[in-house]
Image 1 (cartoon, rainbow, N blue to C red):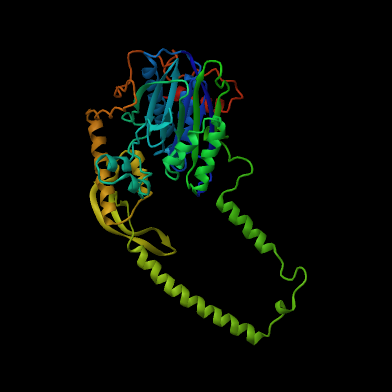
Image 2: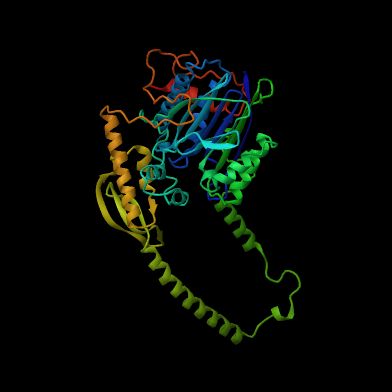
Length: 473
């Protein structure tokens, strides 16, 4: 039976300190893509936009179910190669990466590629199932039975991913081919939703069959904001409907929909807002308007006494609070870099003026340069831990990541990902197809065929991608 998609995409910068949206998403009649960018000197928005731009040409192309997975895998690998090109051309973006969930519909089948900790869910006959597996440090702890689901929800390293697209040849997604049935509802979301909202509540919102995908998407964004999400939050909600009832107009949200040269009009960073408030405060004049009698001039001696008492009280409070704060910092741990080596620190990774709040506790024998570029950047920006045991666990995980990198460089293959019980077919990832010099669209490798009008939000991004491809040595 012919099937179409009725969909809606939404994105919000969240309530944290991020002044820009690093998520990107695209929803079209035959393609759904969601990417959560990270790292590389605030170049996460570039990474997510670039990958979305590299995949968007798959929408509108005709593919059979037999070759859909191969085409999708090749497109993701080419997008990953383009990330490497950008980082080579622009050193300031080195270390950036992005998660990626891509779903390509072909008749009643759905080809799925996933890497990172963004998630996809399927609601079928009232049952909500996660159809992707997180590539994260916390998921690894769950798989090994070292923590339970409740601990995972609040683990301090729940944002530490073990696999994302970073431009390395070994960055390969999990692949699966699924059956799509009328009545199915799909959710693709970044961790700005799942790290802050309970899965049960998400399922209840998705189960509202009388609500359109757009209404549900709006409610999910509001749910994340009510939960005080400090991360960007992006969702795509798509219903499988009978042919002819689907959405035809593509939707682009997040970083991929914004201009690359400047932030959106009307937005201010926290620093800009603080500067504006400071200017307004300094411009206010004492004495403007009427003054009450009790607010009038005070005798100089009384004013001096009042100030002295207040100053003494402030010093006592600050002295006690300062001692408690210092004692608290000495119970904190983090992992960072010292002399090029991964090092466990006690304290905080910040300085208070000339006073350093952290000190090296143990320098390991693991060189930061032995890690992939993405993780080198994470270590240099420091990784917080609850206690010393947590810091040691992070170091152990970094050793595994470094060993995996050495294995990939020596030609050893990674173990296949576990099959998903809902997948009708879940082949393990394979190496890139080098039998033909053409890409997924039949054009020379590196070219992009989208059919998008020049006014499309992704058109400029794709022009940049094409230019970079031409400059590739």
